[in-house]
Image (cartoon, rainbow, N blue to C red):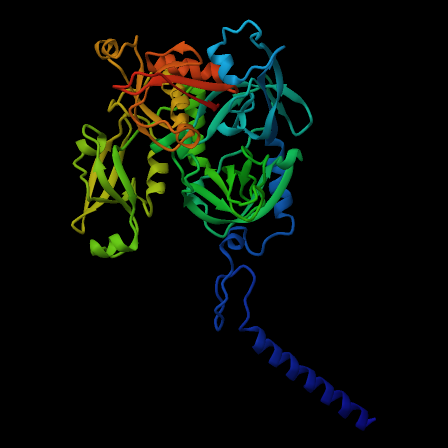
Length: 503
């Protein structure tokens, strides 16, 4: 019996020693919910910490259940024209006619055909929905499918090609809108969900993290030109065609961005997707709802991001900030004393690392709003109070009619050209009733699809005479979805030239 108790005592002592050694080893490992534990270099990811410790197993479920009812499926249709004829006739003959009696003019037939599909996000209980401009662009009919399978026809309220946003509305009340999060507070590495309708698969949720912020991928340059605003949130959540206009949400199910684009050689998911930050979205849709177009304040500078080469040349301590290359005369920046060569480092105490960040922050304000700008000049910090102005250097808000006129110029921007009206006296000297001279060709349809050179004078579009910008905008609007034939000439040239392209 005494020998038996000796074995028991040895077993107890051995077990105690094992537990003591194990406790010592465990003391160097991480404790869930803590940033660091003594003796360890392991840190808990920020997104986990923000959720009060380890990521709950149902975190994605909760975020999905909150956000999915607010995301809608959008399908669009448009008018398309076709031509029937009894004899041979090509497009050139149709535009210019043919005196030969054996040919008959083609008969124009119109029909409504599917145009595309995408997603949208409900932002008010009475039916306002935000989506991408490119989702509804050119649509004659917009149909919205809700999460509960109800469908409605939507009305277009307004668009902003500069940010690729659009606002539509359906006639219904009692909807559950999404809540907005502060996109400035998002962090690289935090969990996000993309909610939308890829490939017409309604109510699809994918998960990923924020990969980067303030990305500029030159997506909107063709349509918006130099006024494009790109400061995207980049994510690796799976986003595919049909996700456009859908929601990028945090783990609370709150909106942090509108999914807009993917970077992919194949056109489908490869791990690089981009969303418009919610803070910018909020301001744009407020303007579209209240004014029909965006009231945008401008700083009035040309700028670029500081790179390593420039930082070395200027002996800067950090490689960040927006370098001002030029200041528009009479602009808010000019009035405040900002000059070319200055480096903007903060706006309203928000640190500026790149020029896209600056563009996004300034785009949240209207003409007449005041912002505080901190900048470096000769490596000394200065502060200026700037009153933002419109493109026309006015601090007054534009009327709905003025904004509508400005918005229609987006069609001309899509062509990628800058124009000036020909004076009546000059037009008479060239034997014309009037016209628009192309003074500059930027990226766009004209550059990509024709060999038109700067200096060309447009006198007609689809056989309709053109003398003013308003004439051109009206003609382009009427031609959406059809071919466009530009007619005109170069100065000091006798012959008439014609250029055709799709629009």
